[in-house]
Image (cartoon, rainbow, N blue to C red; front, side, top):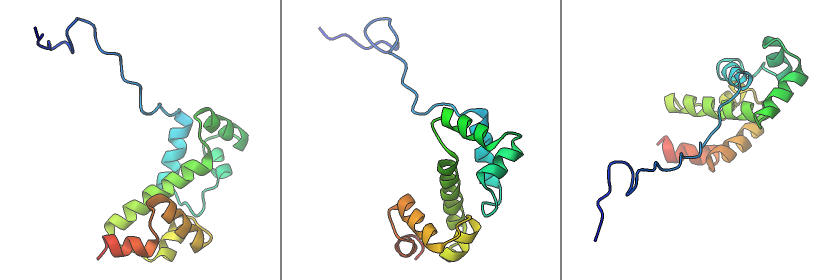
Length: 131
């Protein structure tokens, strides 16, 4: 005999196990660093400058980010990727312009990062999504 499923998730009255979170909450420090990077001038922001604006030493900043299993360079890369994607959704721009705006000293470093983010070269991306 088949049993109809009850609205209580199954045949008995037990609840299913809670899902494992797919992310973990960021500390206040990591969140503040991300906000600074997302809104600031990436050409001028360095880890020491960000630490100073948060009222802590560079060592303390590194220690707190490490407690969140991250580092400044990873957060900077994510902020650059987010801002790049946001800019390209609005209007296509030459790579050298975006590279400068995102704080890259070398245009080729930007192109390598772009390929890492998208799996496409900058020109391939333009051909595929902008024409």
